[in-house]
Length: 206
Length: 320
Image (cartoon, rainbow over all chains, first blue to last red; front, side):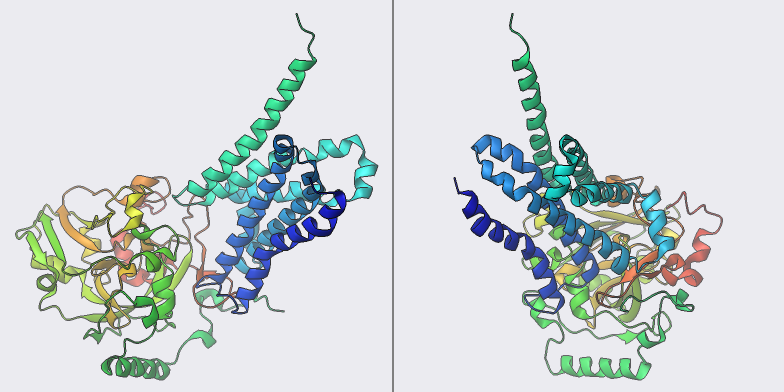
């Protein structure tokens, strides 16, 4: 198991670089380096950002189960960074849609948020993420005490919303959203199973 | 500020700066034709390494062609839907190399005096090829401008003398999972099928295309024979056609089978009738870069004058 120092000095910076990679690649491609953004650049940027936002959300959700399964408690030190990266990608995904795709055309944007279920769901997930991002600092954790944990359990709602948002917008091929849904079901199912187990253990025998 | 706000006068969706002057366009054509004549495969040759596209002889139909700037050969041949080769828009170009479009036979069947199997060359014999620059509006709310080469569908259909029972025309795509990897996964029911009402099929705009940009169709765009109905969403434009059948009843169509509440038989471009999951009011024109926002979609994709009569008295929100 790596020491706290090793996590801080090597593992965290490495994960930081890894998480930035998709964004860096997009920027490079926008300037024609390392490929291009293709015939429909707006769609490409928007999809890439959304996809990585969802993937990183799922990775964040996987931290606790992975810790339990492999006894890797050091993983928890990466969780805040993973979560904030997920939030950043999702926020950029939303801004891309609002600014580049819709061109800040409010008569298009507002009805879409209100009336198109898959957009409503995605937007709700983004709104729910904002308080989690704001309260991710050490100071906030101290200030909120026990309530911090309760608040951050909202992630159990946000991630399924994200998968649903993705699932609902694909035209016919549901293979990729199905993979995400399965992983999320396992990650959340594990938590339910663990909690029930604990309750049972607490009950007096006989 | 790099965000382009909508300006008054944008309603047509075309900025004056976007319109290619005719002389420039004609110059481009001359250059392209010269390149073709010189035996150079032309633009985008790198993308057709395995697709044997050859130059075609044709005359341009100016009356039915839009003057809007055309999409590049590269955009048209590397960004499109052809699920038989995979679901990504880059999949058709990437996965269609093994497809063999020659020789090609088309079956003509159903309610017509003359039916049978015909070699593609015989089907198109004595039909002069026309170039028509059409707008293409995808149901996914993006659009292109494409110079097709083909023959009016009506001219081909009339040769077989459809009977009075021929109320519809049904089309079928070839089924070749060996050469079309997308057909090995049943994301849609294969083979792909499409259909038109007979009067839609006889409309002068309906085109049986055999080429684009003056050359035969590359595999990824539906070689060697595809339908182009520019007033309808792109998925009506069935590709790699092997059967044309005259029917009395409305034929089934692939996307309608897959999601009947989302894709109807008619699939006319209509900015007022939204897809259940997204708005059809505006579209993105491919090829104008990262900072071009959407432009308004036109009724019947701008072909209202030519086709509106076909649907007079019909509730287009019901018959989507």
